[in-house]
Image (cartoon, rainbow, N blue to C red; front, side, top):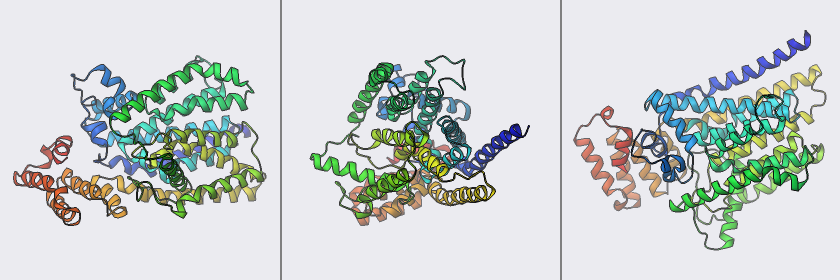
Length: 475
């Protein structure tokens, strides 16, 4: 009976933590759509709005978005039928998906051998890390949330071999993998990670591992090829001037994203390099070396065995970062959302390290200190994450935050004016356009000023103007 009560206590602890995170993210459900891809993905997307003229080719491959994400778009379609264009329902779905991934991460940590407190620490670190603010608070961040949710579910089936779901067929993991990559192609790394699981945990030979995963590799290559073609067609793939420039951007992005993981770099809706290629910055370029040294020291002090949560967590972190590492040079190679997948591996590794350095955690003193440490981390991350969430409240706050960081970027200044116009504040939009014109030249905003004045003079009430239609006119 004591064991049963102890197990139920653990269930209640996890449930309470998820409930606390739900309460913490609840304000996100009152946020608006923002003029940063939400119009493309949701409220101006003809597929979501039910345009019957859209072909099945466009529905399945979503070429206008640059890569095939039909599963993500399908969720928007369902929500449009349920909530029309009320953003609260869309935001609530994002919060639920993130919490579900937190729970799956906890279960995966336990399946990989973590104790209760190690898995709990991993869940909390992932759930409240500041970089989750972008995918959770941004409706267009849904693709990352869905892809990770299906990826964790598929990986759990692979690791447990159906222990938790004995009646599911063996191809269930492959189905979830398909749902993941068609939510966002970033999930193409999964077969490589599963290969590491087979290699280190099941001791399969390289030949057997490749044969077992070869169908998934073929699917991955097809999705990557389609994504590259789509991104190139939209101009999102840039050709570097030289191999040196390409390597420079790869290393700079690595340092930038490592700083995000280690709480050094503050999250921001739009991250940009100062120049292209980025100039040498000691705090960015040397940080990966410091981070790698720190991780190596943690491993040397108490090396995790091969196939453990800490060891596989590192594999997950490295492999999941590859699709976003700018090895394929992109015009937007810095983004908070690129860290969302690697954060899972990061959390598993530190959950394992946290557990390995508390061998006497069952003793009252260690238990008290451990709980105090977890609560302290929880509070500090909550404070940082709250600051990162606030800019996503609406378009004006988003572009105000970006403009404060990058006041020398012409199009950022103009987008802030667009945001005021989209929100219906034409007076503020005209003031912003006037400021942009004085700083960067009148040609940048001349057409926007004329259009905004026309809309203002017509006295068109905001509630009669669809967000997408107004955004179309302002852009």
